[in-house]
Amino acid sequence: MKFDNMKLFKVFSVMGLALVMTACGGKVKPPEVVLTLDDEKKAVELNTEKYIPVRTYDEETGALLPYIAAINPYSEIKGRIKADYVSQYVRARDLFRKSAFNEAHKTLDNLIEVAPKLSGPLVLKGDVYVQQSKLKSAIDSYFQAIAVNENNVNGYLKLAIAQRKHGDFVRSQNTYAKALSIWPDFPEAHLNLSVLYDVYLNKPLKAQRHLEAYQFLSQGKDKRTAQWLSELQERTGEPVELKIEPVKAISISNP
Image 1 (spheres, rainbow, N blue to C red):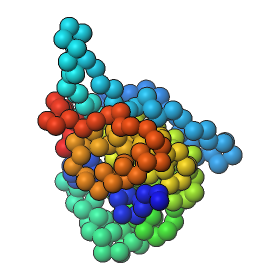
Image 2 (image 1 turned 135 degrees about the vertical axis):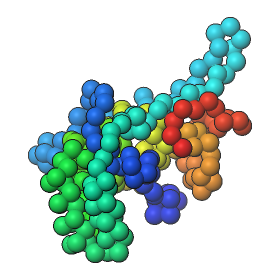
Image 3 (image 1 turned 45 degrees about the vertical axis):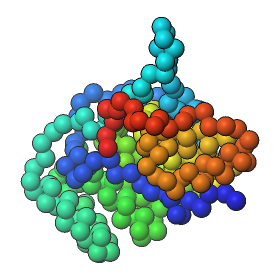
Image 4 (image 1 turned 60 degrees about the vertical axis):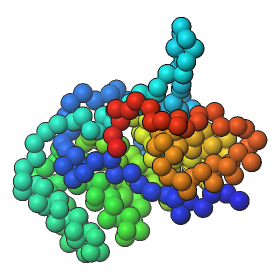
């Protein structure tokens, strides 16, 4: 029995409101994966195994070294945001939560017009479209968000989920690959990529390896994935390669 993704599928909100609203700035990593909205261009599945954590050993003692997780680059972007922009964003978010979608769109459109360098409002606009079952419009909004801020890993995660719901499974895989190229130790990108590989692309071994990465990076805090990992192992016949450490490794990633 394959994993019931509806019970576990979740979007990782990396930071709070202040960071969600952060403008594009700082050093942007050159794109390792290029995404496209061109429906005529056939998507090809990309290699994601290279983003799975690799353990290293001390050359002298042979002891397993603590794993130091990479920092989320989105958390390093700094910038001041006008109080009025924050107020408009909060209003739009509240309208969204109340299912007042048309009003939320109007508020976001006004904010996007006066603050085009903020990616957060575009991500939220995509969220509104998703709730309206307008997946193509949501995909367009998420693309605009990551065009404004290439390091907005939340935007990639939501884009990939929208693409998956739209039936664009390989494009969704490409988007997860893009997110991991920016932040290889993005736990929820590994988790949701596992779902995609297992449920939609029928690649259980790849699903297992990325689920191992999620379990490792999250220190096994999500106990619901343990049963799924065990079931994947039964299907693949492959042992776990990336085991959770009994004591949390040195980490400089975000909580």
